[in-house]
Length: 247
Picture 1 (cartoon, helix red, strand yellow):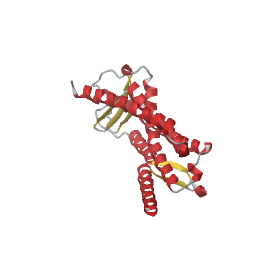
Picture 2 (cartoon, helix red, strand yellow):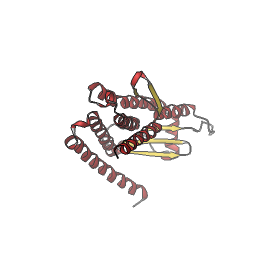
Picture 3 (cartoon, helix red, strand yellow):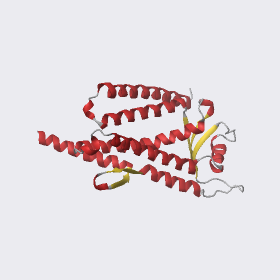
Picture 4 (cartoon, one colour):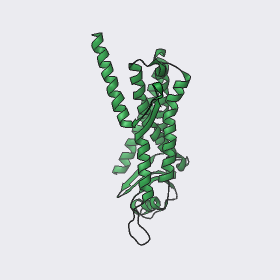
């Protein structure tokens, strides 16, 4: 068995296992968790369903990542799925962008719950809607930007034909990505500024989340990873101080 075939089998096994574990988690949240969790219970149900769909997409429309020289492409092969590959590729990027924002929301909610902010943690239909839709909006903007800058074009088709498939047909593929140093008709490399602008724009959308409107209409906009580190640390510190007080 070649390495690629082994990796494909491992990915499928992991995909099935992830669907099973998420399904068990979803059952426990819905039927076994206490109602006093409030908004957090519904937030966890949403996150579990989201990840369940995400994992199912990976199994139903497996994608391949190609990295070589200055090119990066995520491709879906129509031969491996019954669904439209273009739609699957865009849906994959939408769920990826939304997933990043979901992690930030998760940490923010936990911190607000620990400090006793009932305005945003007690059950309220409007609050639940905000918690859920903020990551979705970021995912939509991220997907539109990805399609605009990284959709199939002359440069990415050149990368796929020359660097990956060695001039084989690409008609059955849908791919999204960039190629920074393609070759012109004279065989000379040139800078693909469209790809550079796209990398800059999409990286900004990944790193920057418009989190939510808190007290006194103050807006917080910060790096996604910093959000998790900051609110995770604050949550740990607060819980540690409460533990010291109880002792």
